[in-house]
Length: 248
Ligand SMILES: C[S@@+](CC[C@H](N)C(=O)[O-])C[C@H]1O[C@@H](n2cnc3c(N)ncnc32)[C@H](O)[C@@H]1O
Image (cartoon, rainbow, N blue to C red; front, side, top):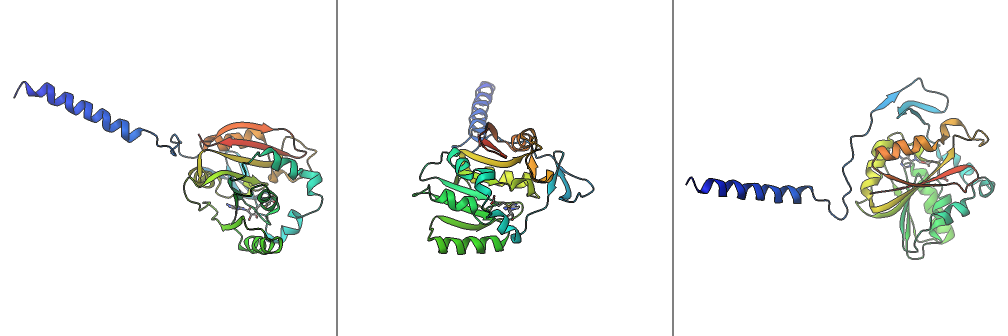
Protein backbone atom coordinates (compact mmCIF):
# COMPACT_ATOMS: atom_id res chain seq x y z
CA UNK A 1 0.00 0.00 0.00
CA UNK A 2 2.82 2.32 0.97
CA UNK A 3 4.54 1.58 -2.37
CA UNK A 4 1.42 2.63 -4.29
CA UNK A 5 1.31 6.19 -2.93
CA UNK A 6 4.05 7.77 -5.12
CA UNK A 7 2.55 6.04 -8.17
CA UNK A 8 -0.94 7.31 -7.31
CA UNK A 9 0.24 10.90 -6.82
CA UNK A 10 2.15 10.80 -10.14
CA UNK A 11 -0.95 9.53 -11.94
CA UNK A 12 -3.05 12.30 -10.36
CA UNK A 13 -0.43 14.92 -11.19
CA UNK A 14 -0.16 13.91 -14.86
CA UNK A 15 -3.95 13.59 -15.17
CA UNK A 16 -4.40 17.05 -13.67
CA UNK A 17 -1.87 18.57 -16.07
CA UNK A 18 -3.59 16.98 -19.08
CA UNK A 19 -7.02 18.22 -17.91
CA UNK A 20 -5.63 21.74 -17.39
CA UNK A 21 -4.05 21.70 -20.86
CA UNK A 22 -7.34 20.83 -22.59
CA UNK A 23 -9.36 23.17 -20.37
CA UNK A 24 -7.21 26.22 -21.14
CA UNK A 25 -6.19 25.37 -24.73
CA UNK A 26 -7.66 27.96 -27.18
CA UNK A 27 -9.93 26.49 -29.86
CA UNK A 28 -9.80 27.63 -33.51
CA UNK A 29 -12.29 30.45 -32.92
CA UNK A 30 -11.54 31.44 -29.35
CA UNK A 31 -9.41 34.49 -28.66
CA UNK A 32 -7.37 35.19 -25.53
CA UNK A 33 -9.52 36.31 -22.59
CA UNK A 34 -10.05 40.03 -22.11
CA UNK A 35 -10.05 41.93 -18.82
CA UNK A 36 -13.49 43.25 -17.73
CA UNK A 37 -14.31 46.51 -19.54
CA UNK A 38 -13.73 49.81 -17.75
CA UNK A 39 -16.80 51.20 -16.02
CA UNK A 40 -18.92 53.99 -17.48
CA UNK A 41 -18.90 57.43 -15.88
CA UNK A 42 -21.15 60.45 -15.97
CA UNK A 43 -20.82 64.19 -16.60
CA UNK A 44 -23.21 67.11 -17.02
CA UNK A 45 -24.74 66.44 -20.45
CA UNK A 46 -23.44 68.76 -23.16
CA UNK A 47 -25.60 69.87 -26.07
CA UNK A 48 -24.49 66.94 -28.26
CA UNK A 49 -23.75 64.41 -25.54
CA UNK A 50 -25.81 62.08 -23.33
CA UNK A 51 -23.97 62.74 -20.05
CA UNK A 52 -22.46 59.22 -20.05
CA UNK A 53 -18.71 58.78 -20.41
CA UNK A 54 -16.51 55.91 -21.53
CA UNK A 55 -12.76 56.05 -20.96
CA UNK A 56 -12.89 59.85 -20.69
CA UNK A 57 -15.13 60.48 -23.73
CA UNK A 58 -18.71 61.73 -23.53
CA UNK A 59 -20.94 59.60 -25.77
CA UNK A 60 -22.93 61.56 -28.35
CA UNK A 61 -26.63 61.54 -29.12
CA UNK A 62 -27.87 59.07 -31.75
CA UNK A 63 -28.71 60.58 -35.11
CA UNK A 64 -32.42 59.96 -35.64
CA UNK A 65 -33.91 58.64 -38.87
CA UNK A 66 -35.00 62.15 -39.99
CA UNK A 67 -31.25 62.55 -40.66
CA UNK A 68 -31.42 60.19 -43.67
CA UNK A 69 -31.33 63.16 -46.03
CA UNK A 70 -27.99 64.25 -44.53
CA UNK A 71 -26.56 60.73 -44.81
CA UNK A 72 -27.53 60.61 -48.49
CA UNK A 73 -26.23 64.14 -49.28
CA UNK A 74 -24.66 64.55 -52.71
CA UNK A 75 -21.57 66.29 -51.29
CA UNK A 76 -20.56 63.17 -49.38
CA UNK A 77 -18.26 61.78 -52.08
CA UNK A 78 -16.26 65.01 -52.02
CA UNK A 79 -16.21 65.26 -48.22
CA UNK A 80 -15.58 61.65 -47.19
CA UNK A 81 -14.38 59.97 -50.41
CA UNK A 82 -16.43 56.82 -49.68
CA UNK A 83 -15.37 55.21 -52.98
CA UNK A 84 -11.74 55.48 -51.90
CA UNK A 85 -12.56 54.35 -48.33
CA UNK A 86 -14.35 51.24 -49.60
CA UNK A 87 -11.45 50.38 -51.95
CA UNK A 88 -9.09 50.61 -48.95
CA UNK A 89 -11.01 47.82 -47.20
CA UNK A 90 -9.72 45.30 -49.80
CA UNK A 91 -12.63 42.89 -49.22
CA UNK A 92 -12.72 39.44 -50.81
CA UNK A 93 -15.64 38.96 -53.26
CA UNK A 94 -17.20 36.39 -50.91
CA UNK A 95 -16.74 38.36 -47.69
CA UNK A 96 -19.50 38.65 -45.11
CA UNK A 97 -19.26 42.10 -43.55
CA UNK A 98 -21.52 43.80 -41.02
CA UNK A 99 -22.12 47.52 -41.51
CA UNK A 100 -22.91 48.42 -37.92
CA UNK A 101 -24.95 51.58 -37.52
CA UNK A 102 -25.72 51.30 -41.24
CA UNK A 103 -28.32 54.10 -41.24
CA UNK A 104 -29.72 54.51 -44.76
CA UNK A 105 -27.18 52.02 -46.13
CA UNK A 106 -25.07 54.62 -47.91
CA UNK A 107 -21.97 52.41 -47.43
CA UNK A 108 -23.82 49.06 -47.38
CA UNK A 109 -25.12 49.37 -50.95
CA UNK A 110 -21.80 50.61 -52.32
CA UNK A 111 -19.96 47.70 -50.67
CA UNK A 112 -22.55 45.11 -51.74
CA UNK A 113 -21.72 45.79 -55.42
CA UNK A 114 -18.17 44.54 -54.79
CA UNK A 115 -19.27 41.29 -53.17
CA UNK A 116 -20.85 39.15 -55.89
CA UNK A 117 -20.59 36.09 -53.64
CA UNK A 118 -20.68 37.86 -50.30
CA UNK A 119 -23.11 39.75 -48.13
CA UNK A 120 -23.50 42.98 -46.18
CA UNK A 121 -25.38 42.63 -42.92
CA UNK A 122 -26.75 46.14 -42.38
CA UNK A 123 -27.21 46.47 -38.62
CA UNK A 124 -29.10 49.31 -36.99
CA UNK A 125 -31.19 49.90 -33.87
CA UNK A 126 -33.78 52.13 -35.57
CA UNK A 127 -36.55 50.15 -37.33
CA UNK A 128 -37.13 53.18 -39.57
CA UNK A 129 -33.58 52.83 -40.92
CA UNK A 130 -34.18 49.14 -41.63
CA UNK A 131 -37.46 49.96 -43.41
CA UNK A 132 -35.56 52.44 -45.59
CA UNK A 133 -32.89 49.81 -46.32
CA UNK A 134 -35.52 47.30 -47.38
CA UNK A 135 -37.15 49.79 -49.76
CA UNK A 136 -33.76 50.70 -51.23
CA UNK A 137 -32.88 47.02 -51.74
CA UNK A 138 -36.11 46.52 -53.66
CA UNK A 139 -35.67 49.75 -55.67
CA UNK A 140 -32.07 48.91 -56.63
CA UNK A 141 -32.71 45.18 -57.08
CA UNK A 142 -29.99 44.33 -54.57
CA UNK A 143 -30.05 40.87 -52.99
CA UNK A 144 -27.00 40.87 -50.78
CA UNK A 145 -27.79 43.60 -48.26
CA UNK A 146 -29.52 42.04 -45.26
CA UNK A 147 -31.15 44.53 -42.84
CA UNK A 148 -30.69 43.36 -39.26
CA UNK A 149 -32.10 44.81 -36.06
CA UNK A 150 -29.45 45.04 -33.35
CA UNK A 151 -29.80 46.13 -29.74
CA UNK A 152 -28.02 49.07 -28.11
CA UNK A 153 -25.71 46.62 -26.35
CA UNK A 154 -25.55 43.66 -28.74
CA UNK A 155 -25.10 43.21 -32.49
CA UNK A 156 -27.19 40.02 -32.14
CA UNK A 157 -25.23 38.04 -34.71
CA UNK A 158 -24.11 34.40 -34.35
CA UNK A 159 -20.59 33.65 -33.09
CA UNK A 160 -17.84 33.60 -35.73
CA UNK A 161 -20.25 34.60 -38.52
CA UNK A 162 -18.42 37.70 -39.83
CA UNK A 163 -15.22 38.20 -41.82
CA UNK A 164 -15.27 41.91 -41.06
CA UNK A 165 -17.24 44.76 -39.54
CA UNK A 166 -17.46 48.38 -40.61
CA UNK A 167 -18.59 51.34 -38.51
CA UNK A 168 -18.91 54.67 -40.29
CA UNK A 169 -19.64 57.78 -38.22
CA UNK A 170 -21.55 55.55 -35.81
CA UNK A 171 -19.41 54.12 -33.00
CA UNK A 172 -19.16 57.44 -31.13
CA UNK A 173 -22.92 57.33 -30.58
CA UNK A 174 -23.17 53.74 -29.26
CA UNK A 175 -24.45 54.19 -25.71
CA UNK A 176 -23.04 50.78 -24.62
CA UNK A 177 -19.72 50.73 -26.50
CA UNK A 178 -18.05 48.11 -24.28
CA UNK A 179 -20.93 45.65 -24.65
CA UNK A 180 -21.15 46.34 -28.40
CA UNK A 181 -17.44 45.60 -28.84
CA UNK A 182 -17.71 42.42 -26.76
CA UNK A 183 -20.62 41.14 -28.87
CA UNK A 184 -18.76 42.08 -32.04
CA UNK A 185 -15.71 40.22 -30.83
CA UNK A 186 -17.81 37.11 -30.55
CA UNK A 187 -19.51 37.64 -33.95
CA UNK A 188 -16.19 38.01 -35.80
CA UNK A 189 -14.16 35.06 -37.02
CA UNK A 190 -10.63 34.71 -35.73
CA UNK A 191 -8.46 37.34 -37.52
CA UNK A 192 -11.67 39.15 -38.51
CA UNK A 193 -11.21 42.87 -38.99
CA UNK A 194 -12.97 45.99 -37.81
CA UNK A 195 -12.84 49.08 -40.01
CA UNK A 196 -13.61 52.17 -37.95
CA UNK A 197 -14.31 55.39 -39.79
CA UNK A 198 -14.63 58.43 -37.55
CA UNK A 199 -14.19 62.13 -38.23
CA UNK A 200 -10.73 63.25 -37.08
CA UNK A 201 -10.95 65.12 -33.75
CA UNK A 202 -7.28 66.14 -34.06
CA UNK A 203 -8.14 68.30 -37.08
CA UNK A 204 -10.08 71.46 -36.30
CA UNK A 205 -10.62 72.06 -40.01
CA UNK A 206 -12.98 69.06 -40.18
CA UNK A 207 -16.32 70.89 -39.87
CA UNK A 208 -18.11 68.40 -37.63
CA UNK A 209 -19.31 68.90 -34.02
CA UNK A 210 -16.74 67.71 -31.42
CA UNK A 211 -18.89 64.88 -30.00
CA UNK A 212 -19.19 63.37 -33.47
CA UNK A 213 -15.41 63.14 -33.92
CA UNK A 214 -12.77 60.86 -32.33
CA UNK A 215 -9.02 60.98 -31.93
CA UNK A 216 -6.91 57.99 -32.91
CA UNK A 217 -5.59 57.79 -29.34
CA UNK A 218 -9.12 57.55 -27.90
CA UNK A 219 -10.32 54.98 -30.42
CA UNK A 220 -7.26 52.79 -29.85
CA UNK A 221 -7.72 53.01 -26.09
CA UNK A 222 -11.30 51.75 -26.35
CA UNK A 223 -10.76 49.02 -28.95
CA UNK A 224 -7.57 47.70 -27.37
CA UNK A 225 -9.35 47.51 -23.97
CA UNK A 226 -11.94 45.33 -25.74
CA UNK A 227 -9.22 42.93 -26.87
CA UNK A 228 -8.69 44.07 -30.46
CA UNK A 229 -5.23 44.47 -31.98
CA UNK A 230 -4.55 47.78 -33.72
CA UNK A 231 -3.31 47.17 -37.28
CA UNK A 232 -3.08 50.53 -39.04
CA UNK A 233 -4.61 53.97 -39.48
CA UNK A 234 -4.91 54.56 -43.24
CA UNK A 235 -4.21 58.26 -43.70
CA UNK A 236 -5.80 58.66 -47.14
CA UNK A 237 -9.24 60.15 -46.43
CA UNK A 238 -10.11 63.86 -46.45
CA UNK A 239 -11.98 64.09 -43.10
CA UNK A 240 -11.89 60.69 -41.39
CA UNK A 241 -9.60 58.21 -39.74
CA UNK A 242 -9.78 54.73 -41.20
CA UNK A 243 -8.60 52.66 -38.27
CA UNK A 244 -8.15 48.93 -38.77
CA UNK A 245 -8.35 46.50 -35.82
CA UNK A 246 -8.12 42.73 -35.75
CA UNK A 247 -9.59 40.05 -33.53
CA UNK A 248 -6.57 38.07 -32.27
C1 LIG B 1 -24.69 58.97 -38.00
S1 LIG B 1 -25.52 57.51 -38.47
C2 LIG B 1 -24.35 56.85 -39.65
C3 LIG B 1 -25.02 55.95 -40.66
C4 LIG B 1 -24.11 55.27 -41.68
N1 LIG B 1 -23.05 54.53 -41.05
C5 LIG B 1 -23.51 56.30 -42.63
O1 LIG B 1 -22.35 56.67 -42.46
O2 LIG B 1 -24.20 56.67 -43.57
C6 LIG B 1 -25.29 56.43 -37.08
C7 LIG B 1 -26.24 55.23 -37.05
O3 LIG B 1 -25.83 54.37 -35.98
C8 LIG B 1 -26.99 53.78 -35.44
N2 LIG B 1 -26.69 53.25 -34.10
C9 LIG B 1 -26.53 53.92 -32.93
N3 LIG B 1 -26.25 53.07 -31.94
C10 LIG B 1 -26.23 51.82 -32.48
C11 LIG B 1 -25.98 50.51 -31.97
N4 LIG B 1 -25.70 50.29 -30.69
N5 LIG B 1 -26.03 49.47 -32.83
C12 LIG B 1 -26.30 49.67 -34.15
N6 LIG B 1 -26.55 50.88 -34.69
C13 LIG B 1 -26.51 51.94 -33.87
C14 LIG B 1 -28.02 54.90 -35.47
O4 LIG B 1 -29.32 54.41 -35.36
C15 LIG B 1 -27.69 55.58 -36.81
O5 LIG B 1 -28.48 55.04 -37.83
